[in-house]
Amino acid sequence: MEDKYEIDIDETIENMCVIWKNAKKRGFFNDEKFGWIDKIMEEICKDKRALLFFKDVLNSKISEDDERIKEELFYTGYRDLEASEMLYEKGYYEMSVYHLQQSTEKLSKYWAMEMFKLSSADIYKMKHRSPEAHLKAMEKMLNKYLYNIGHIYEDIPPDLGDEPKKMLKEVRKIKQKLNKAKKDEKFLNPSYEDIDYLIKMMDEIKGMISKLENTIEEKYRKKIEEFFIMLYERELNEEEISMVINIFISFASMIAATTNLFIISAITFPHEASSRYADKKYLLSPSLYKPGMPLVDRLPKLIEETKWIWEQFQNIPDISEEIRKIDCKIRGINP
Image (cartoon, rainbow, N blue to C red; front, side, top):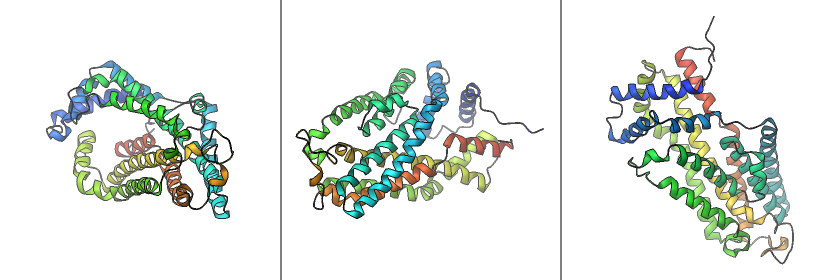
């Protein structure tokens, strides 16, 4: 009877430390580029708080109700995106802006629940401040990181030091700025130059992903092969190497998609009310959303970018599941 593959979190963490010790003996960390990884693993393997951090992350789950809410956010996020495109083509520009805002809001909340296990209660508190989904997720992870393993990075290149604490402060500053965005005319009605700069940034991020496979093949394939020889004590065949590289690409695609989603959500979130209602407390009103307004003129490009993001979210596999499949295949275990 074939062995059935089961994941044991404590055993997995213990195996990380065994792998590190074996790699150290074989000189894998002699290259100064990887010396900081050696230092981190040394501290993690002797510090229970650090191990608890990884255990907490690996064990994170959401309730069945939240799972349903998360999937609905993904479904309706795409429906809003389709509606935005159709409304723009009909000339209903203010409603097109509103539905793009709704799409990025729902996709941002979906991402925060999917990747960082935020609850529906966390999500509802954000109201329409869609960038806050990204910031709340970062804040949650940084807080856990600083409590559990932040102390081990003090002397480690590449200059991590106090960076997590600085990042946490910056996240909180950005959250404060978001609360004032609807009253900031520059934020609410950005120039062509500002929007084009952000669009160029998103295109460059997408371009990096399209070149990533060649970059990994050219620069990192040898190190990947060395690592897996150390781990499994045999060379990987081409199919197995391809599976490993695809995991790197999937992870990078996820990072790129979430970065671009944050950018678009930051552009669109102040418009959830002014694109629908005229009110003295809003700097804009529905009739002002028309050709000649930079946001309206660049909306087709923002819709196109959001489609790419949605496609990445739809196609990115469960990375932990893909790692499990590779491990099963290499070890000859039935998944």
